[in-house]
Length: 178
Image (cartoon, rainbow, N blue to C red; front, side):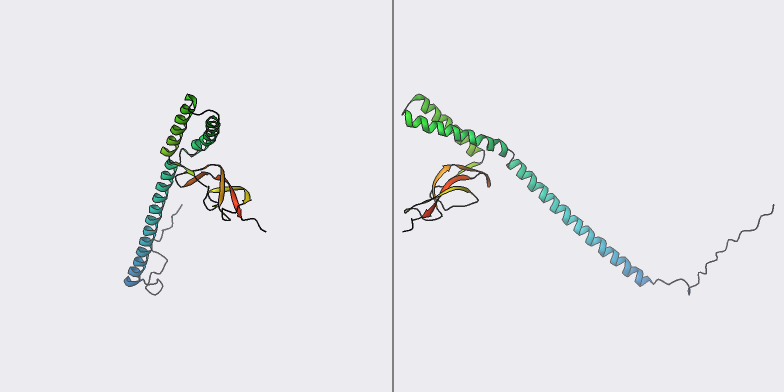
């Protein structure tokens, strides 16, 4: 068995004529272009991360600010029922100890809601605002201008700047047509 000698010389011609010559200036220009591209990419990534951080902080703040919203939304109908009972008690018995106790409880509930950031939405005498009021009827009125709330049937509530429940109102159609 005979071994053939292996040739260690390369078959590729590495002469300057066949291999494209890359000048030092073009390499520097290419590297500067790459550097600028990576610098822009880093700046964009940094800006994207900063925007993400700010958005996450805002979302966290909103979550903390409105964490009790569902609890407060469930408490409001109970307050409505309590106020109806309180109004009925006021109509039937003046200065009774039960009425005075109910008044104290109503004040505590109101103070609790105010302390929690809940504010009532008052509608009566205000211009109708579909973002704050829910109109259930219109009625003619010679004294109240058209588009103004004549009376409020159910109080609305806001939690800070977010509406929990719109006020249910009756809106004026203006004076009766002759």
